[in-house]
Length: 594
Image (cartoon, rainbow, N blue to C red; front, side, top):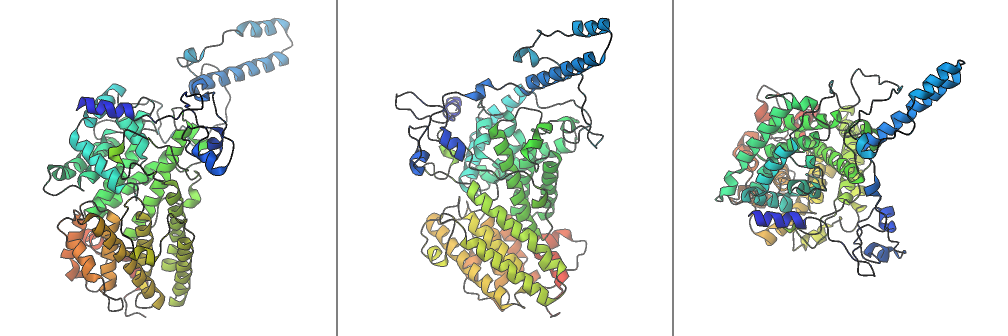
């Protein structure tokens, strides 16, 4: 097993193309750099051929000539000190005092970059403008001390995990079948690179708790008779125990003193655990854990423009680090808006307060991780779907308050809802061809691709959730819901034709099936596909407790749109009718009001 893992670790570095001289070219060409595209390192490269531009090689690797932040800061402070001394000399009339100032300056004693790293960057006095806060700019921490995992200890932990066959299989199942979907807050390549100990990747992109959290989700996709399936809850509890002990400092105060970078894996862990809880029907815990994640993201300034990160993150950030942090944030943003739809709660991360730019495609590892890719020979695009889903989430963010709180009359709600549905339609028809769909195409669909279908599921869940409260009032809502249910039916059929069983389906499928059944329980929505969706939820190969809990409690929720009492039974309220519409039903009133 050690030999196998060693091979994976070695192969995880990208393949390099070769130039016309037969030598390997290691750097992306100028054209790919300007377009921020992935270069295949050939001469000419595939992108330059595609765009008909000259492929200009880059031979100078400036990354090797970068100086550390410590060295740059030392030089800045020294320059400021010299400027201050010169100003002082100019103001002094006494020649003797001037000579003393000059003699105190050691002009030729310039530290090398290596020496500067061992110096105190505050060796030279610098006058600076203070913050309005009493705390340092880095996070909310009062102390400058940083107590992280010892690097050697972390390496030992990850090395042991990377040789565990069950952990490896769990991670493989996750990245093959569940990624990216609503897990866009994880960047697969940096996680796996750090997990396998790649020296070129920063270790904090992977942590013990994050490995266990992802493994809990992945192992859930195995056969119920498989030993790996029984490990799912164990992995979940392990990840949850580690991360909560860190956050609430149950064993020490290292979390308060830890770096902002080390909290990235904690955010990702909390969201993985939250989605595990949603799949288990444990929505209150999911709400708590996801809320913690979003607040920590704000605390470390993940939502800010990268220009502000230099005062937040202690370590030197490369271009890839900026891109990965941007990806993590926007993945968090989408997760927040999806959870808000599921639970009928307001969002925490707002586009108006998010100054971080959207990410473009990030580099992919071209070999060594085939076991973690659904289609190893197919390039997985995540940036384009992410950007489109950000726009979709923005639409819901705008109209949620208009439809469900600001509108005083049914006519006003109808007007806002019509505008919302129009925006959703425009969003759909403006999708690029590789992301778009039509009913006729879905009807003929033979192969189900879990790495791209999540866009359709996300769209239908949002559309149904926003129109579901108005089935009895608006014909447009009924028509749109029936159309969505039919398209979902074709998607489920494509899955069944491709895979026959449902062990490896995602949470989107379970939730959309529940939404469809809830709508068809009314007398105004056609019940053509109700039996098919119910069979899906009843399937013995479906490993989500959420489906069983819904089916077991259907009889208690015949009055689908009745106003809830909002009593003390929080679990009942948010486990079984957990769509947008717990609070919404109260705002609108019972179905007999209109």
